[in-house]
Amino acid sequence: MIVTEAQAKTLWCPLVRMAYFDKQGAASGNCDVEANGTINRNPVDSHCIASDCMCWVWVSTHTGPERTGCCGVAHRRIGGDV
Ligand code: SF4
Picture 1 (spheres, rainbow, N blue to C red):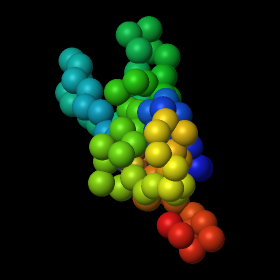
Picture 2: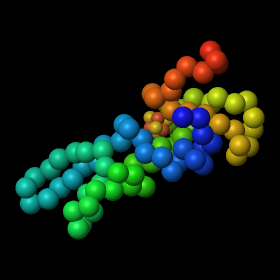
Picture 3: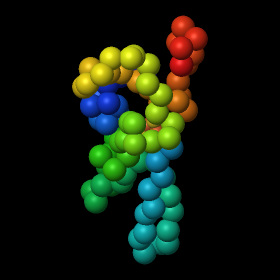
Picture 4: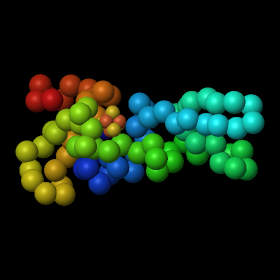
């Protein structure tokens, strides 16, 4: 998925792991369980950090907020440039 950094920062990172601690012990997962038991599959703490991540790949050569890129972990080859 090719997006701007601002768009990427609203999307879930598949590599994020969260630690949970409750009376039954500790576990880790890739989403967030709310206090009422509902599952939040895109919590803010799980969002992509875009160019702050070593896996981020720039796609366009533009500068500024319209510059686009993608997750290098999940990327599909695009015209041989990525
Ligand atoms: S670029 Fe980094 S932070 Fe963003 S989705 Fe990929 S691995 Fe996660």
